[in-house]
Image 1 (cartoon, rainbow, N blue to C red):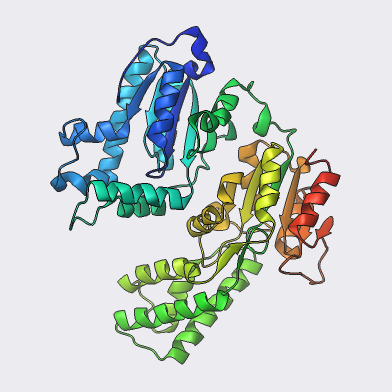
Image 2 (tube, rainbow, N blue to C red; image 1 turned 45 degrees about the vertical axis):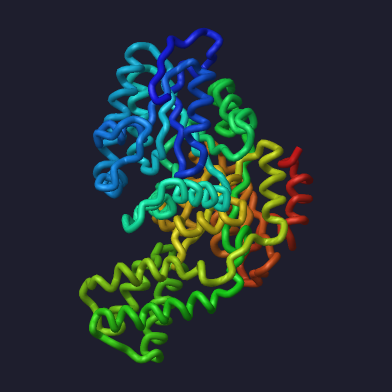
Length: 453
């Protein structure tokens, strides 16, 4: 049921004047949601999968031929698919029909192109990002692979999911009114409730209102804690030893440890000076200390190993963090993340947050490796507040460090709250407006401040 059309009727509501793009990872229930929205808006549902099959010459409803399977997910071909999808959408928009776009929309330029098409025809635009818990997605993918195995291709559904998750670009390019995250594993009525609320809300109200209260959170030692950090560090040194051997410059473990720790110290010094650096820089400095100053293929493997090493340690949500975010979500208070990244980049931190059930409540995530500046730089905080349309004096920021979280928030007039649940920063720097010892105490404070009503 890829492209059925009807003229929208008045009772279809504002959705008839809005181009709806439904995206997210594989097995997130996008097509189920898109189909329901198309029926409710009496519009046309256009599927990226259908476009792909047409471009490959596949028969509708039949699996893509093995020879085309890998190509059909190549990035260059992916852009061809979305260009054709939007060409078909423009034809429907020109005819005055409501349009629902059904695809992953993993990259910012794909979403921006869909928005541009909507605006060119005088329509509003809304991107629905579908999410399900990872275990739900994995079970669905396993069922797909069992139903249509592709032996030897390397492109089973699990591999496709992992590839897409790796390169899914966070939605930072759209205004808050143009993006809504839905948990799509439940009954369709529950799934569509926040979408319909967004469509029916008057422009300029709700989460995007400058009068809305917003709560920002630091990540490490505020929402997440890495309990076995030394395990990840040992793994990174192991990978550095392997990279040296791969590059023809073997080193002793003592040499590798020295090179790594010097690189890590350099990263910390830059961070304290307000300059962003991460796994790529630390890996490059480490290899350089082992006598590999020129770029080498070993660098790329080492960067990825450094970035992913936190998965080898125990990363978990702080006690009470889920309850805090859930209470704010129930109260309609938008939440944002302002996170300094080091060896673990934003794309990996998002996976930790998703696994721990925290990501869906964070409407905006501002990571220093994506913003280009760590806290206390004002850019780190404005990257979180601006998409929500929030004024700094209406915002609160919760974090554990005086130098970054407290100082950065206070400089912008943001109410600062220091959480000392797992780390008590006793440095001789100005303290926060409020200090709490746990998430339970934080909830009480938010109530006292009127944030939770």
